[in-house]
Image 1: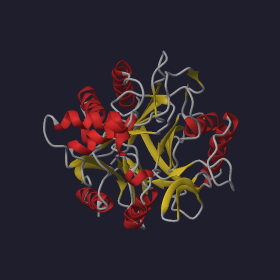
Image 2: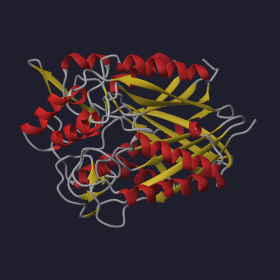
Image 3: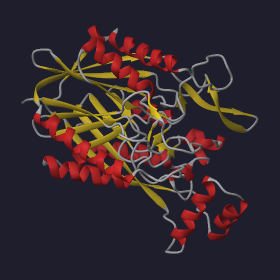
Length: 426
């Protein structure tokens, strides 16, 4: 029985001004770079299975890009698409490169170039594979706060100290058999929405990774957890969120890196020879879909992004009915029966991630969102009665016909359990 691992990293910063994803009010292309964007690949090989994890400093991927990229990586490496995970940090200061209701056109040339970069690092990580060992640390971070505040029957985006948040700051430490560190992968559940504007950059995860790299000498990667309702709070005690200065974002990333490094002498070995990965698609049903008349009313009521959304849906209705559901991909990587990672598509509210950890307890579980397909917000069951942006105010950005029903969490939890059972350890 053996375990091997390989690492590769590349720069994916666009080489010219681009339209940006994340905020709908940008009216021009990017105007500079405050931090280069990067993609990293971790290749893991056990006795009977292998897995490839690709992380990148981008908003995410649509289903079409993710499917095509995984298929092309599979063809280039001889792996199966089910063994390949694509996950994004969800920075809101990167290129707009697939269809969303954002200003400007998608940067299609960048999308093609990005896919080739993924192929390159996938090949490189496999080529660099050596006998390895894996360790794990978990600490707690105070960074971020729940952003859904309900008062007088209305939910707005504001700091909610009493709202759910997963404060587990998890790091996997990948070393060769001599103990030399090959790479780290950190997961934390907080939106990288510190900064807006027109400069390209990776937000607090980028600063965190660079601090870890400086202190450890090894490439550092980041995955964002279930952070759909969590964002940075740089002005504690205030009743609204303020945009910080760049030095505050850098300090936040460095502080989190210091919290991670403080635990490195308490690393727990993770036996990984028997790793296995499984995936599955299931359908998340939409709530009531709009008809042609409703969409026409939206169009005639004014311009903006909702008008573009309505026009898009009308073009679909001219050809046939609107879809009743959306495909959602889940992947489970089990390193041993007591340690697994769950990769979820979409912007998952924190309560769902906490429920998955509770479901599999006492097994150590890491939940990662923004993986394989950014299919909108997936709210927890408890969020629906309160409404708000994540529940019924954001679906148009993702070109979805309607929000998901309040059964979304149940479907997601059940499918995660089913996929985990396929691994044969549960």
